[in-house]
Length: 330
Image (tube, rainbow, N blue to C red):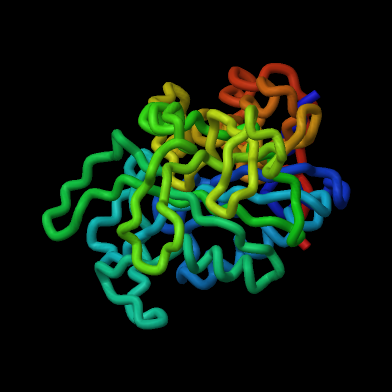
């Protein structure tokens, strides 16, 4: 059964066993974006440094509960330093009233660089920073700006607890392009190839994709040669690229920061085996737990706002409820 812990992230993580979770997929509250009306919330710190320090502390506990081959996927966007003059708390969707001005050279209107500040801080804290993935949005939120382009991307950082970790690349492999299939259907061996490259002693020919499987073999009738003359198995798939084009999706629930299920599905498939455990310490409306359950994983969500429980119930269904709201701060 899935498990939902109602507490702030640190308290919720404290009740989990060490080395018990396969992967963590989450999106922490973005810096200076909105007020969720909870005294223990993250995101309204007075400086970016304080915000980053609080997230590092949370993800340090995540690293404790991850298995040695576990991974962390963090969806995070950037923020701009502002004057604070536009502050409005209407519907809890205003901007942060602090200015950030003159903090480590940050001026009003500066892009702060929150995603990379977090990535580098996590790396310094012991995580292996493995990849920055770009979430490209075909339908971004419109912005009434005249001196820069509209933002249409966020980051998904892949980090690991150990240098060697579980990653099922085949589970998220992409079909090769039609043009590649047409090119590879040619009789490559009989082609003359091009000799225009200086220093090459053999003509350059079209080559086959090199995704997965047995890389080399000595069976010419089933496999194709690499440029080195070795043989490898051909598959009509390629490694997933690091720019993911995923449209945002409307959500009728009273939660403003839901990410689409199609964005995190590759993280779940690549980061965990069937029957494994997927954690989200900033559970929100329960998207991560819902998708994990749909694909045969166990989900653990931690959420500070109990008012989101009806949304979680609607999306997740039955779950074990653990409430830590009354646990006093140390």
